[in-house]
Amino acid sequence: ASDATEHDVVVIGGGPGGYVAAIKAAQLGLKTACVEKRGALGGTCLNVGCIPSKSLLNNSHIYHQIKHDIKQRGIDVEGVSLNLENMMAAKDKSVKGLTSGIETLFKMNKVDYVKGTGSIANENEVVVKPLDGGADISLKTKNIIIATGSEATPFPGLEVDEKKVVTSTGAIALTEVPKKMVVIGGGIIGLEMGSVWSRLGAEVTVVEFLEAIGGPGMDADVSKTMQRLLGRQGIKFKLATKVLSGDASGEGVKLEIEGVKNGKTESIEADVVLVAIGRRPYTEGLGLENVGIETDERGRIIIDQEYRTKHSNIRVIGDVTFGAMLAHKAEEEGIAAAEFIKKGYGHVNYGAIPSVMYTHPEAAWVGQSEQDVKKSGKEYVVGTFPFIANSRAKTNLDTDGMVKFIADKETDRILGIHIVGPNAGEMIAEGVLAIEYGASSEDIARTSHAHPTLSEAFKEAAMATYDKAIHA
Ligand code: FAD
Ligand code: NAI
Image (cartoon, rainbow, N blue to C red):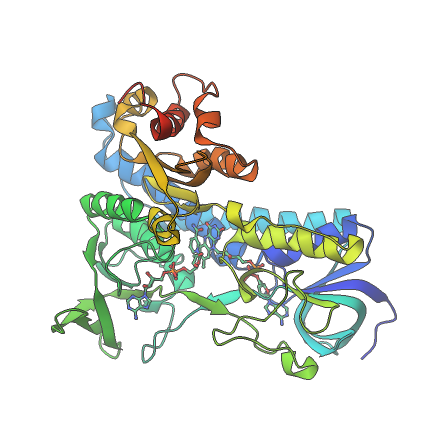
């Protein structure tokens, strides 16, 4: 196996971390290759994650709205029906357009796209097994960036067939609406995909081990509000409940569940079970053992502040290492890693990474939750503003939710911002910028926000931390 060209950087994995790192490295003048094994660029996010799930969330919301909410808007529609095949086709079209768009970006930036499975042979060589089955390719390189991402954590004893027992990958590709769906895990994937299938007509039950939905990091007020609103949409919740075992040998799937507090067991049945209990780093076949690179007890590759492993020329970014498993976090790290290689410095502000859950209404947050601030012992103030008191939300007949600011009691510096509401995912950008700039809540409250917009709720919640809101 040989390849005469030596690279400055070989990136393994073409997801949001890897493809962004590769483009940035090439832009910085480094000779760069990106190895990807799935046959398309964009990783989990574009192929089976962020993008297809948001396509289904958006279109299922429109369907649901036309079915259940359109009359009050003065629009009479008859004969509404679901064409699932076409909804899936619309999703596939978005995915295809975006993944091939990255291929174009690679060409424009002169990144070598190597299709195959990359394995680290030694500190300066990645060996690729080509997708098309040809002879191994050896890529000699000064630097390696590992960006191999993550995979769904399996549920012991319940084999995933992506038809009856599905991960998110199967859940974005079902060919019919299940009558009954049980979701194991009330985190972001469970609530987003649970929403999609519930809107399309499935009876959805979410079984969550903890006493609250939303997964780690969600503010308790947000979690409670979302549970109430999703419950109103028809999703059932079994909280503080553990799935003991599952049996998919019959026509459907049977689960044995147990109350965490009272130990009471019962069995529930479903046509489709979605396993959404978290994701784990993916390093299979990567050859870490060839270079003695270690992972921690959760499988994350161990790195230092500059993303370096014990070999200073091998760096790691994205889901396969520490931190939130989010596409934009992986992207920021991709840029920083390329900059470290070229310039010796790079930076990601981990205190200013937003989280968004794309249900309806959306939930979005940045910074600390109230329970985290409380734990830290810092004195704080809270300002909230409900969308029911916001003029635009009222005209849109979309008034569920609220904005919540948490600020340092002494300095008024913003510690956390939490939103449940229409367009929360777009609105949070202002909060991220405010935290990035070290703003106080008064800085936001004294900034003019256009009327009538939803963002006035954001301003008024900020006002409520140190003064009184005007409209509530
Ligand atoms: P990945 O995107 O996982 O990419 C890694 C790539 O490396 C893969 O394409 C894989 O094929 C390839 N690879 C692995 N090993 C090798 C090898 N040895 N050789 C060659 N290639 C290899 N995040 C958000 O921020 N917003 C969202 O809305 C969102 N929605 C999501 C919805 C779902 C259903 C899921 C599952 C995830 C979602 N995420 C979302 C999370 C997001 O997808 C990940 O955080 C993100 O993709 C991580 O990027 P990455 O580059 O680290 O890894
Ligand atoms: P998660 O970590 O968000 O939630 C998993 C949930 O499952 C937790 O609430 C946990 O308590 C529960 N759980 C674990 N084991 C269980 C068991 N045996 N029985 C019952 N409940 C159990 O993980 P999820 O939802 O799988 O998502 C994985 C990752 O993907 C997340 O870290 C998230 O960052 C990312 N993602 C992001 C999205 C976004 O940004 N909009 C969308 C989808 C995924």
